[in-house]
Length: 366
Ligand SMILES: Cc1cc2nc3c(=O)[nH]c(=O)nc-3n(C[C@H](O)[C@H](O)[C@H](O)COP(=O)(O)O)c2cc1C
Ligand SMILES: O=C(O)C(=O)c1ccccc1
Image 1 (cartoon, helix red, strand yellow):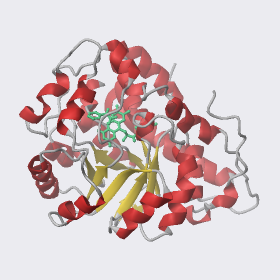
Image 2 (cartoon, helix red, strand yellow):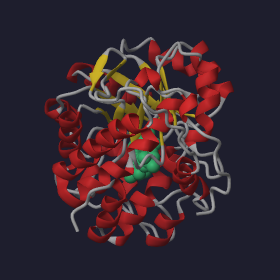
Image 3 (cartoon, protein in one colour):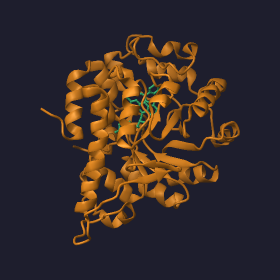
Image 4 (cartoon, protein in one colour):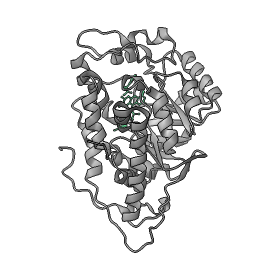
């Protein structure tokens, strides 16, 4: 079967990856309630099309923090792309460039961050976890600035990596070909040591991630870099207001793809309160559960400026390397354009909450 839709790639990736790697990729935290909610909440929202609006040309191009995008779509930061295909981050960053999408590299990328930058042809950000060793974080920030990264995305929903039962059951550990090559090897040493009944990634986070940071610490980072700072993992109006007050340059509404606190709402359900609290002063991005162009359209209609996709890009990469990842991003852009035409909204400015019907609420149990 030739893959045509994003879910086709999910099936193909599952069948070409080892079971433990597929479990790490597709799994979530706890009972995986939030993981399921992310996708099913999009499915529950009906669309309200308008007709006779001249949709011969539907324009998806936009800008984000001063950079041009072919569509308001980007690749969410994900660790270790080489786990899934030898093309690794070089494949996914090339795919993003070809599709005109933003690429957010993970702090735990399995490819040198300068090599990622050299292969990039579009906007590029670096995601960070705040390690107890602040010097190591700062060193990475310096290298990112030098390599031309355009912004930093600090992930704030992960004081520690959550218990992911698929990984605990499989005893998932990182193989030698997928390592976090941008962080000092001594700091990463325990991230790939197997121990029965535990997750190496979770144990490593307890040792190395700094769970003591507060809003006051953001100033420390801001004073040491000129790069825009975006917070990833905001889910409430309260935290959105604090983020604005602390002068951040953007917000990513995210529940980490259901991989951190299980029981939080689907991101499309948390998005309205964050958008309303921010009030338009800075870009709001969202990720989690986006699988179709209509999902992208729904997030934009609620008020997101750009949508990030995670697992779908790695499904494409796993199945067909660079080409597969590119096809996933291209498909989402084309489906978005079609959804704009068929809802009668020829520009992104036309996408407001009037596009959205009342959700059919029996969700979260699919
Ligand atoms: C395999 C995998 C690795 C991830 N690694 C990171 C990471 O290193 N840093 C981070 O902030 N988020 C990480 N995430 C979370 C993603 O950035 C994103 O929030 C999530 O995948 C979006 O949901 P989706 O996969 O349903 O699109 C990871 C997600 C996956 C699936
Ligand atoms: O962020 C994640 O979901 C994730 O898988 C991860 C990978 C390495 C370190 C911390 C988290």
